[in-house]
Image 1 (tube, rainbow, N blue to C red):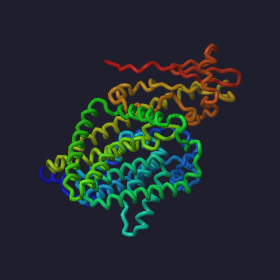
Image 2 (cartoon, one colour):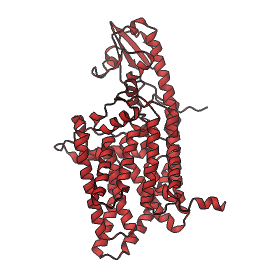
Image 3 (cartoon, helix red, strand yellow):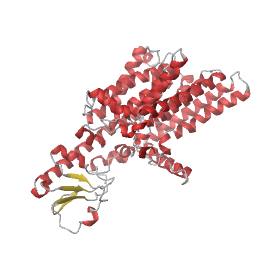
Image 4 (cartoon, one colour):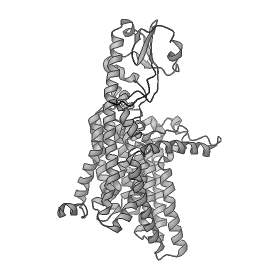
Length: 502
């Protein structure tokens, strides 16, 4: 028993750390692999082996799939890309663990694991296509932080190229890089790095970001659809728009703190506050002059609001603001900040006490498996919906031969009755799933129906313009009308989810 407990506090070699992260990262994505659910955009991409990443400013995502599939397109080869990204992430986390701790133990490894165990990152990983490039963008920014070389030119250029690579895979990952730079300030304070080195470190990071953006600007940015790059309208109260966007992000983040998660994260915050006090004492007892120590303290204090802002980060400043969970990659850095400060406070009390960080990690792992089950329920429901539509259309010759069938776009929170209990206990699961439609028109070619399109340009006219006609098909979920050579699928408003009691 003694040897077993010693394993959790003894110093580990690089191979042991890598094996730990390989196991931990794979377990987290295992529910998504088992669910094997094509998530939203995956449907049309797998249907046509489509790409369209370059016009989103993500040229390197496109090149990744071209290289991986040895084609000029993107055939679906899931889960291979996710497995490659998981392997790369285990290597990156190993590098970061040795960057933060000279001789890491298991408890030290726990500090950096939230970069992968970010609850909101589950939505990123849900995409069978986009998940791997998003994960690899995270890998790139981690290596941009940990890379070290004696040559000043190499030390400047390589991280810059890694930042450009990350931007070309998924632009939001720059939030993680800036957040990790904030953590470098806390590390500098804890390790008593001399004040002149602080200025040099900040200067280096700024130079790397600027050069990385310039490399991205001349490589991937020219391919981007300029409509996606529009910033806030600076003549229309931009600060108010940013404030509204922050409020929307906060509302979504608070969905995570429900039930036992409230107590787990409350304990984590308390431990982090104790770690911040210890860090303040370290700065107070430094040998530098009082003005320098005060400036150090202010810089460390400024990292907290900045990391909070980086939860959504650059996404706040775009006109087309996206509040989806996949944009909240910066929440991972906030977790690492809390874990790092908590480790400082717990380790000084007892060497085994930092193992308490396993509790919030287990909570996030539990959320991953709960989300995997929700994806499985959604897959069952989507398959049933698909075959129901296929049967109703195929059984009517007039619908089979219709020139076009328009499907109304009806959004609701009440489609997935099978996950009602999970949604009630873990509200964040519904936010992560982000599927509030009955069926996508892109799914129907999978069962041989090729004349159905989503009704976009008609602005859902079928919901109000054809209801007085007798439907050709009446289903619990939809009605199908036929007017001449054109059909119209009108979704019924689903009933609110009610928790069943037996």
